[in-house]
Length: 198
Picture 1 (cartoon, rainbow, N blue to C red):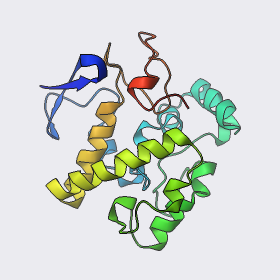
Picture 2: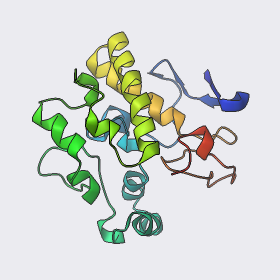
Picture 3: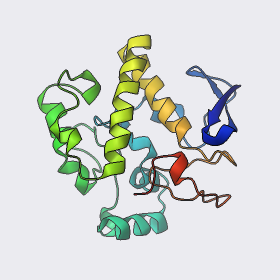
């Protein structure tokens, strides 16, 4: 087992070691999700850790209603299976359909900003949500490093796996979602360990 050290010297154990599966799937995500390029948001806001995706995947209507209230969408429209689904997408969240970053990447024939020589561009610098912008500015260089070390396919999987690992409670090890303020299991505040307060 590999030990990951979280902020404030908290130790969390994960059943993965350098991208190799050992003894079962990571709690909260399956291997097929980690390999799924539909979930590899081009901006670096990995869809696999998005609350809307997690609520859709788990058919959690209560969570969809909470997220719909937060984002201003009806619960039945608060659904997504990843922003990089091929056209026509099965379920693409309304905000993702209007994403200029997604449109830009597709128009350039890329599947991610990590492939673009113009990154970071004004679409990233002007992203309206500060915490999202900060995540993007950390995620794309990390994605590039993974691709440089492992090649495009394995490197992208390695990056996705690292994002999934990051979204676990440092106290109890339960999976979290991007934007979580508290662990649903142990109730510990987690925002500052993840991405800050939205």
